[in-house]
Image (tube, rainbow, N blue to C red; front, side):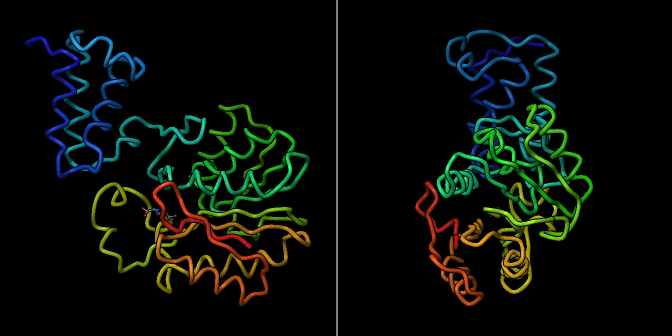
Amino acid sequence: MTDVSVAAALARAAELTGLSDSPRADIELLLCEVLDRPRSFLFTWPDKTLDAAQQARFEQLLARRKQGEPVAHLLGYRDFWTLRLKVSPDTLIPRPDTETLVEQALERLPAGPARVADLGTGTGAVALALASERPQWQLVATDLHPGAVALARDNARSHQLTNVEILQGSWCVPLTGRFDMIVSNPPYIDPEDPHLQQGDVRFEPLTALTADDKGLADIRQIAEQALDHLCCGGWLLFEHGYDQGAAVRALLTGLGYARVQTVQDLGGNDRVTLG
Ligand code: GLN
């Protein structure tokens, strides 16, 4: 086997053009994993060569990526907020867009004690980010799928977050008592959306992605159920699609929610609606 340098390995990003939205970032993540080094190493030591085992592992990971497998599944983790979270094919892979939901949730309540629920928690991303930022909050996260519940508990344990409880069940059903805030990143993609045939979403569970009624069915169900679980003056926050802001505002207003507003993500798209 001929020696392969870090720089030469990085140049293989070209092979992912058209197959990935982020060829360069993908290669960097795979290479960091293979070398067990931080990203800065790649730029400090471009001439460093991969040993035979590292080369073999790199080739194997790159081949799987070319077949479409998400980088997060290849590595077994994804960084979200300040946390490295385990991921599996049982749940959605946490996305940067969802940090907007975390930011909004943190802004809505003072830092003192509060009860906060996260519905359809998946990896636990939103609940765990909130639990890590607000040790005085009590988080309750729910998910219908036992695989997701196990994964979220595992993630809570590895970050030693003891102020979060993860319960199995549909949306608000496992909740008892009232909450100061309920947040959710539910499935919201229209089942007819052609975007589902491309890229990483093909490897994620459809139950975490799609909802009937043009993607709004689960948002409606949660908003109805939440009325019985929010404190007076409590907040409900949803992540949704870039083109669903007006529909979600109308839905919340129709159910009697007040102070309904939509917030944009870093890309300037409507992303979170609250009331
Ligand atoms: N924003 C994600 C996507 O478009 C979907 C997230 C979700 O359904 N909650 O791939």
